[in-house]
Image 1 (cartoon, rainbow, N blue to C red):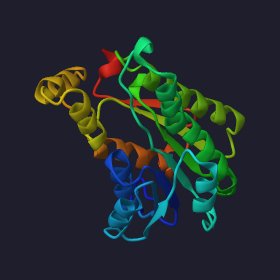
Image 2 (image 1 turned 90 degrees about the horizontal axis):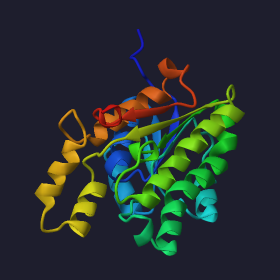
Image 3 (image 1 turned 60 degrees about the horizontal axis):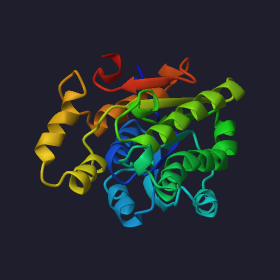
Length: 249
């Protein structure tokens, strides 16, 4: 009997794949038997991760630049799985969000999903592939001091549903909406905005999630693997919260 959620002979591309949720996803997809392209601006970090895994390759990609994306995909013969994971955050309400910062968040979190997905679409249509967009609970509920970030993740949810409506039989596209996950992303936020009260703020982040802990990158990666597998073939256009009960409370 074949292993459940197995991805043998599948080729996957993970953006922002060199760290955090992206790196955990790369490892999980490789463990499931997939060949994985680790796409990241930080090529050396992607190469270091690729060296640890069978059938993994690092590629340089700026997800906000169409030419960079095209160049990265130029030698890719097939694509079965696309994980749009690359993203950034920003702290500030509407009165403290500059136009420049708002534009930057939207370019990285929204334009990138459009650009990478559009470039990879012919390959994904050929393989009847699977797209997983990494969103956030911030796309479903308001989070204090996260105006631009909430706007960007709401757009990711909308794009996910819209593609599923236009291409319901040709491929599958779903969105994962994590709560707060223990990653370098979160540690960077604590260091930048709360360097003298990290433990206090970390405790507040934990308290948002009724389960009583932060998520782990591996929590998210396991759901990515499932959504890309044959066992999930009836799931399409879904936004799935994985947030320790945050949005249920």
